[in-house]
Figure 1 (spheres, one colour):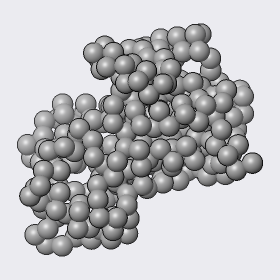
Figure 2 (cartoon, rainbow, N blue to C red; figure 1 turned 60 degrees about the vertical axis):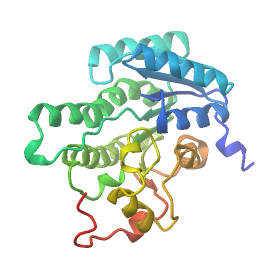
Figure 3 (cartoon, rainbow, N blue to C red; figure 1 turned 90 degrees about the horizontal axis):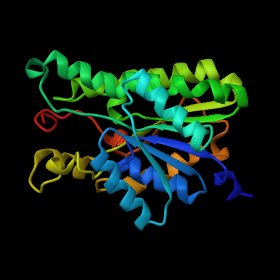
Figure 4 (cartoon, rainbow, N blue to C red; figure 1 turned 45 degrees about the horizontal axis):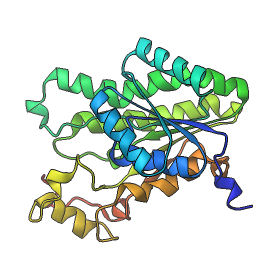
Length: 265
């Protein structure tokens, strides 16, 4: 009975931007639980490389190119998935963008681009998919939030503003759609070892030292560390979890306080 709660056989999942890193790990985890997975990106090269990696893992993935920030492109992409694979039961809004730039050096165009990808795109994609979930009275939506959903840090103002907005958007979606048996939650990764964080993980880098000393687990997270939580939120096991942000952070939020001179990176 307990394993059945996590069984996704017969479900179709769209994981945006899941050609690498966290999104790839989550998509693979959902596939291993029985879901048919669909993955998008705006780069044909990334999609081709991801297709090879999914095949190597023994996973059949449906990959297609569309831009999550464009309403018309999203509509075309989702229509294609619905026609060729079926209605989407699970949506993971994973596609994201970060630029580490001090506020006074950031261009308005950079701020707008990050907000478009990290906040507006989940709104666009979710709004396109939800009507069919409402019809079926069933659906799972997982928004990739962040620890930056709840606190700020130097050089990530646009990203933090977007993720803070996504946290509240997640809660508003829950308030509007829970009555249709749709669960909308956020997944909040801690500091995860991905290509994006590679420059920060160099030995001797002050931020690497901060993560290693402040994280009670004593290490950076791995993308696979997020799979269990994503599966919980995407399956029947999470049917009464709604409007929550589940942080998977090795305990750092429990231990993360500002110390002058330490947190200035």
